[in-house]
Image (tube, rainbow, N blue to C red; front, top):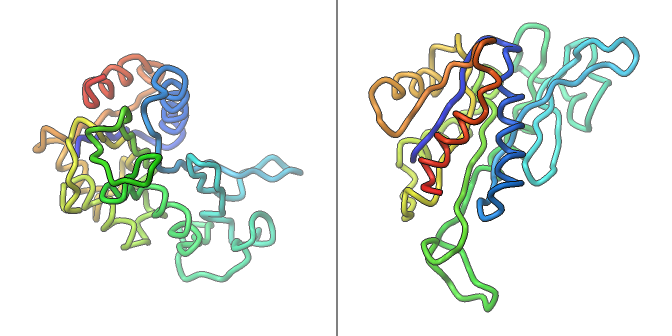
Length: 221
């Protein structure tokens, strides 16, 4: 599947760019069906310091991805659960991440129906699909089920019968994560014409129009 992945150092503005692109497609291309998720940092209401991260799906569901070990009482329902998955000071709630992220990126093209309940081909729909994946990083890599699903989508192993012009992926991938799916994506960016890597810097992080054009070319809109 055609894919565009943003990469770059932490806090350079990758998720901000993703948010701007989502807003653009909602406003300018209502025919595009947006799926997927993004991550957002969570700060303390008292000190203003970062205490964790949430995963937010594009249809409005939200849950705790990670919380600082000494701040487990702050946040959403599953953030209190002990976990064996840890990145620095943060405990990662893999089950909560999988509960929200995995359904958000799945599209069952074999079950698309019209208003009368009749099965239809995606080519007959006046709609295309943009799957947002923010991000593929160290925390998300703890979920092998998630990695396998995304790997199948990117590298066309999901047995999806769909015109490639009707669907593409917009994602972010951690710059310094050099194993697993993150490495496979970055390697593919050098070898696979369907996978493009865009490194975000402080100099180009406001170039939303260039990314919009790239996605419009991928989706042929």
